[in-house]
Image (cartoon, rainbow, N blue to C red):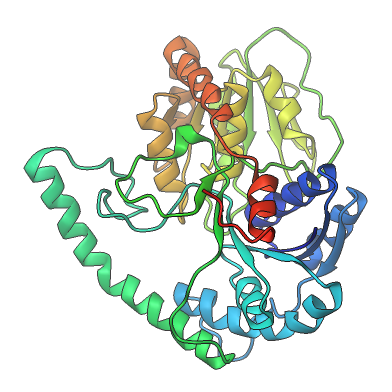
Length: 387
């Protein structure tokens, strides 16, 4: 089958789209990826047919402070820019990233079935959960359920506003105001990061994390037998800043080695016991005893799959939610606000208590309880709705 995969330039969304494209190729299918120009050459080098996704740049008058307008209003514009390219590739299916909704709108305009890709846990509202982003566990007992009900009511206005913005965007490109939704949803996370809910959406499928390494380079740690601490500063624009510097300052003299994954490379100005630069994160994790990260989904999923406990310095976006889910699972310690001393204390705590590593290994074992995303896509193309 010919599959058009659509995702924006943020690494947390572009990388899973590349990973899915590679999975489709391995299964004998023909994907074409539309993504931000930043990753076009890298995706092509990995063997994926890739074209720049048009319409990503903000236009005069766009309000990027309004998340709903940014997602839905720009989605309408992206869909009009994507339409000619989508016609040319004769796609049997479109897979559209949840934040790049223009792919789904374009598919619907052309009458092509489409699937939504969520490269993180399911973040749809639920009558059984507090609002996503609060970081709270579901309330227990009468008081807990009342708390969740009141919190959901408080966020209801924003949800309704988002639905109205989506309807407006749909109408602007000639589609009915009521959104029928995708034929299926790929929830690309490790089950350990999901939260049970009484109203799991129909046709939403846990498919496991979709992970891709943007380099084949291997960054070697400094020599020695001290525990290896890996640091992965957030790549999200909402991530905490200064994490690497604080970790280096705090862990100096702590009897550890440090290796840092830096997407844009490193200036090399670090002590002898520190290595920093671009390198495969999955390889770094093989020898790491603990990871310090921002709590972005991709990095957190990699750590869980490797059975490595984490110290999380969450920024904005969904990082607070994910950090608390990991902490409730027992594999993580949250540091917020962060400074050199608090990062040092948290790392030493994790290194001294084996229960964190035990919980991370337990999380890794949940990864087998998922569906194959390619199989879900094929079922949609075959005309059935995945069960």
